[in-house]
Image 1 (tube, rainbow, N blue to C red):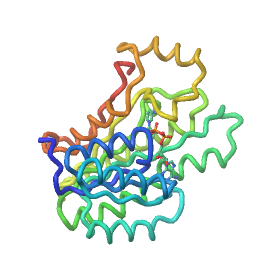
Image 2: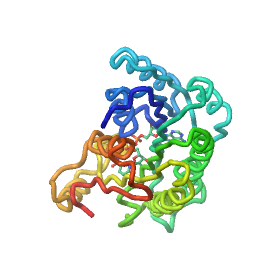
Image 3: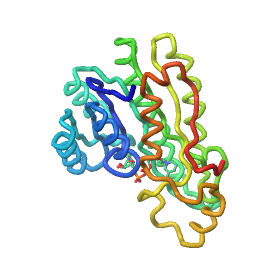
Length: 246
Ligand code: NAD
């Protein structure tokens, strides 16, 4: 049931962290993958390595979701023949600061990448999925969208927003055999959490019943499940991957 042979999977922000783990996992299970991020060479190198290691097709391209995506998206369509079966909206940024000191640029940049960027790429991909009457869209939200966090009003707003986005889009696209779901990770070991002060890490660990931060693969496993035939009757849903924290 976890066989993605012949499927084309686009993962945004897949040059490192959770996105990279998701792309590697899909490739391991036979999918052709499109690696995107803000670093062209990192995307190209990873795509080459994936082709060598897993014998699938892989395409690496610079796709900055905070800018104009038209031209990179055209390249993706050319490469994939316009067939994208799975879209994982993973790219996301933080710009942490207390709300009272938050500059509008801190607000705008997080909204632009995490929400507006997701809107743009999803609309482009959904047009292809509607034509082929098949698709799986998986949005990476966050526990912070559910419980909030000091210094992350901008980020929490986007991650909560992705839940409304997921539920509404699921209803719009269901009749076209396209499911739309979300995964809400807790604290996962990536660059995003690498520089947390030790006392903060300790206080989070006390709140996680399973007693550890998650690994990117813990998130990837759930994404693959949602993209698989095992999840064909699930849409508009959010699955939490947080060690029991929420
Ligand atoms: P990361 O910082 O390690 O990687 C982020 C990826 O997104 C990178 O590949 C980067 O190039 C890409 N990216 C950033 N801005 C972009 C833009 N404008 N256009 C295109 N790509 C862009 O982060 P991560 O920890 O792997 O997080 C991945 C996703 O998971 C994010 O949406 C994040 O909010 C979410 N998340 C992470 C955690 C965690 O604890 N690490 C927890 C909950 C949710």
